[in-house]
Image (tube, rainbow, N blue to C red; front, side, top):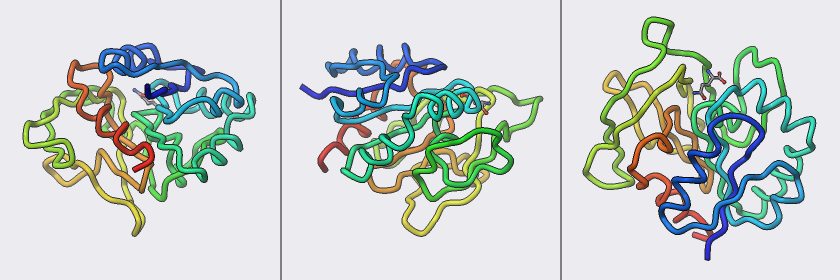
Length: 191
Ligand code: GLN
Protein backbone atom coordinates (compact mmCIF):
# COMPACT_ATOMS: atom_id res chain seq x y z
CA UNK A 1 0.00 0.00 0.00
CA UNK A 2 1.20 3.48 -0.86
CA UNK A 3 2.06 5.61 2.13
CA UNK A 4 1.86 9.34 1.53
CA UNK A 5 2.75 12.11 3.93
CA UNK A 6 1.20 15.55 4.23
CA UNK A 7 3.31 18.25 5.87
CA UNK A 8 1.29 19.01 8.99
CA UNK A 9 2.97 22.13 10.34
CA UNK A 10 0.18 24.54 9.40
CA UNK A 11 -2.66 24.89 6.90
CA UNK A 12 -5.26 22.51 5.49
CA UNK A 13 -3.33 19.26 5.78
CA UNK A 14 -6.38 17.40 7.17
CA UNK A 15 -8.23 17.93 3.86
CA UNK A 16 -5.33 16.43 1.92
CA UNK A 17 -5.20 13.45 4.28
CA UNK A 18 -8.93 12.94 3.74
CA UNK A 19 -8.55 13.19 -0.05
CA UNK A 20 -5.72 10.62 -0.01
CA UNK A 21 -7.62 8.21 2.24
CA UNK A 22 -10.66 8.48 -0.02
CA UNK A 23 -8.60 6.88 -2.79
CA UNK A 24 -7.22 4.14 -0.58
CA UNK A 25 -3.85 5.65 0.32
CA UNK A 26 -2.31 5.29 3.76
CA UNK A 27 -1.93 9.00 4.62
CA UNK A 28 -0.08 10.44 7.58
CA UNK A 29 0.82 13.92 8.72
CA UNK A 30 4.52 14.68 8.86
CA UNK A 31 6.01 17.07 11.40
CA UNK A 32 9.49 15.73 12.05
CA UNK A 33 12.33 15.20 9.58
CA UNK A 34 12.72 11.50 10.39
CA UNK A 35 9.09 10.89 9.33
CA UNK A 36 10.14 11.72 5.76
CA UNK A 37 11.93 8.35 5.69
CA UNK A 38 8.78 6.28 5.97
CA UNK A 39 6.73 7.79 3.14
CA UNK A 40 6.61 7.34 -0.64
CA UNK A 41 5.45 10.88 -1.48
CA UNK A 42 4.79 14.19 0.29
CA UNK A 43 2.15 16.90 -0.14
CA UNK A 44 2.76 20.41 1.21
CA UNK A 45 -0.69 21.94 1.87
CA UNK A 46 -2.15 25.40 1.49
CA UNK A 47 -2.05 27.78 4.42
CA UNK A 48 0.44 30.52 5.10
CA UNK A 49 3.80 30.05 3.39
CA UNK A 50 5.60 32.32 5.84
CA UNK A 51 4.51 30.12 8.76
CA UNK A 52 5.13 26.86 6.92
CA UNK A 53 8.62 28.01 5.87
CA UNK A 54 9.52 29.26 9.30
CA UNK A 55 8.40 26.08 11.07
CA UNK A 56 9.93 23.78 8.44
CA UNK A 57 13.28 25.50 8.96
CA UNK A 58 12.92 25.45 12.73
CA UNK A 59 12.09 21.71 12.80
CA UNK A 60 14.94 20.81 10.44
CA UNK A 61 12.58 19.55 7.72
CA UNK A 62 14.21 21.28 4.73
CA UNK A 63 17.61 19.48 4.50
CA UNK A 64 15.99 16.07 4.99
CA UNK A 65 13.32 16.88 2.41
CA UNK A 66 15.99 17.85 -0.15
CA UNK A 67 17.73 14.55 0.54
CA UNK A 68 14.50 12.58 -0.07
CA UNK A 69 13.85 14.55 -3.28
CA UNK A 70 17.35 13.65 -4.48
CA UNK A 71 16.42 10.01 -3.82
CA UNK A 72 13.38 10.45 -6.11
CA UNK A 73 10.51 11.08 -3.70
CA UNK A 74 7.63 13.01 -5.35
CA UNK A 75 6.58 16.26 -3.66
CA UNK A 76 3.53 18.36 -4.50
CA UNK A 77 2.87 21.83 -3.11
CA UNK A 78 -0.64 23.32 -3.28
CA UNK A 79 -1.14 27.08 -2.89
CA UNK A 80 1.13 28.09 0.03
CA UNK A 81 2.77 24.71 -0.65
CA UNK A 82 3.54 25.87 -4.21
CA UNK A 83 5.31 28.88 -2.72
CA UNK A 84 7.28 26.48 -0.49
CA UNK A 85 8.37 24.53 -3.61
CA UNK A 86 9.64 27.54 -5.58
CA UNK A 87 13.30 28.41 -5.96
CA UNK A 88 12.40 32.06 -6.44
CA UNK A 89 9.78 33.95 -4.42
CA UNK A 90 10.32 37.72 -4.44
CA UNK A 91 10.64 39.20 -0.94
CA UNK A 92 9.73 36.07 1.00
CA UNK A 93 10.65 36.64 4.66
CA UNK A 94 11.31 33.02 5.68
CA UNK A 95 13.21 30.00 4.34
CA UNK A 96 11.53 27.81 1.72
CA UNK A 97 12.41 24.38 0.32
CA UNK A 98 13.41 25.85 -3.10
CA UNK A 99 12.88 22.56 -4.92
CA UNK A 100 11.49 23.67 -8.30
CA UNK A 101 12.93 26.01 -10.92
CA UNK A 102 9.94 28.35 -10.88
CA UNK A 103 9.22 31.91 -9.78
CA UNK A 104 6.06 32.32 -7.70
CA UNK A 105 4.33 35.59 -6.82
CA UNK A 106 2.33 35.51 -3.61
CA UNK A 107 -1.20 36.89 -3.30
CA UNK A 108 -0.98 37.61 -6.98
CA UNK A 109 -4.62 38.01 -7.86
CA UNK A 110 -5.26 41.21 -5.94
CA UNK A 111 -7.72 41.88 -3.21
CA UNK A 112 -10.90 42.19 -5.26
CA UNK A 113 -10.48 38.65 -6.54
CA UNK A 114 -8.84 37.20 -3.43
CA UNK A 115 -10.74 33.98 -3.98
CA UNK A 116 -12.37 32.51 -7.06
CA UNK A 117 -13.23 29.21 -8.68
CA UNK A 118 -12.70 28.23 -12.28
CA UNK A 119 -12.94 25.13 -14.49
CA UNK A 120 -9.44 24.39 -15.72
CA UNK A 121 -8.30 22.26 -18.57
CA UNK A 122 -5.52 19.94 -17.34
CA UNK A 123 -4.51 17.63 -20.19
CA UNK A 124 -2.45 15.37 -17.89
CA UNK A 125 -5.57 14.15 -16.05
CA UNK A 126 -7.95 13.82 -18.99
CA UNK A 127 -10.50 15.81 -20.95
CA UNK A 128 -12.97 16.64 -18.19
CA UNK A 129 -12.20 20.10 -16.73
CA UNK A 130 -10.92 20.31 -13.17
CA UNK A 131 -12.86 22.60 -10.85
CA UNK A 132 -10.14 24.68 -9.20
CA UNK A 133 -10.54 26.72 -6.01
CA UNK A 134 -8.17 29.67 -5.61
CA UNK A 135 -7.82 31.27 -2.16
CA UNK A 136 -5.46 34.24 -1.95
CA UNK A 137 -3.54 32.25 -4.48
CA UNK A 138 -0.04 32.63 -5.81
CA UNK A 139 0.73 32.52 -9.54
CA UNK A 140 3.67 30.96 -11.29
CA UNK A 141 5.31 33.82 -13.19
CA UNK A 142 8.26 31.88 -14.62
CA UNK A 143 9.03 28.24 -15.32
CA UNK A 144 12.57 27.01 -15.97
CA UNK A 145 13.53 24.95 -19.04
CA UNK A 146 12.99 21.61 -17.24
CA UNK A 147 9.53 22.57 -15.98
CA UNK A 148 6.34 21.58 -17.77
CA UNK A 149 3.23 23.76 -17.52
CA UNK A 150 0.25 21.61 -16.51
CA UNK A 151 -2.48 24.26 -16.52
CA UNK A 152 -3.05 27.94 -17.24
CA UNK A 153 -5.94 30.34 -16.80
CA UNK A 154 -7.56 31.65 -19.98
CA UNK A 155 -5.22 34.66 -20.01
CA UNK A 156 -2.17 32.37 -19.98
CA UNK A 157 -1.31 32.71 -16.27
CA UNK A 158 0.42 29.50 -15.16
CA UNK A 159 -1.34 27.84 -12.22
CA UNK A 160 0.08 24.30 -12.28
CA UNK A 161 3.53 23.02 -13.17
CA UNK A 162 5.64 19.88 -12.95
CA UNK A 163 9.37 19.29 -12.87
CA UNK A 164 10.08 15.57 -12.91
CA UNK A 165 8.50 14.21 -9.74
CA UNK A 166 7.80 17.66 -8.32
CA UNK A 167 4.51 19.52 -8.74
CA UNK A 168 3.14 22.93 -7.81
CA UNK A 169 -0.47 24.10 -8.11
CA UNK A 170 -1.77 27.56 -7.20
CA UNK A 171 -5.18 26.19 -6.28
CA UNK A 172 -6.63 23.72 -3.73
CA UNK A 173 -7.49 20.28 -5.22
CA UNK A 174 -8.10 18.92 -1.71
CA UNK A 175 -11.21 21.14 -1.35
CA UNK A 176 -13.18 19.39 -4.10
CA UNK A 177 -14.24 15.76 -4.46
CA UNK A 178 -12.23 15.30 -7.65
CA UNK A 179 -9.18 13.19 -6.77
CA UNK A 180 -7.68 13.07 -10.26
CA UNK A 181 -4.78 15.36 -9.42
CA UNK A 182 -4.04 13.36 -6.26
CA UNK A 183 -4.01 10.18 -8.38
CA UNK A 184 -1.82 11.81 -11.00
CA UNK A 185 0.64 12.92 -8.33
CA UNK A 186 0.78 9.42 -6.83
CA UNK A 187 1.48 7.98 -10.28
CA UNK A 188 4.86 9.76 -10.10
CA UNK A 189 6.03 7.41 -7.34
CA UNK A 190 8.88 5.33 -8.80
CA UNK A 191 7.75 6.34 -12.30
N1 GLN B 1 -1.60 33.68 0.58
C1 GLN B 1 -1.00 32.53 1.19
C2 GLN B 1 0.51 32.67 1.25
O1 GLN B 1 1.06 33.53 0.67
C3 GLN B 1 -1.39 31.27 0.44
C4 GLN B 1 -2.86 31.05 0.54
C5 GLN B 1 -3.28 29.62 0.52
O2 GLN B 1 -2.50 28.70 0.73
N2 GLN B 1 -4.57 29.44 0.34
O3 GLN B 1 1.15 31.89 1.89
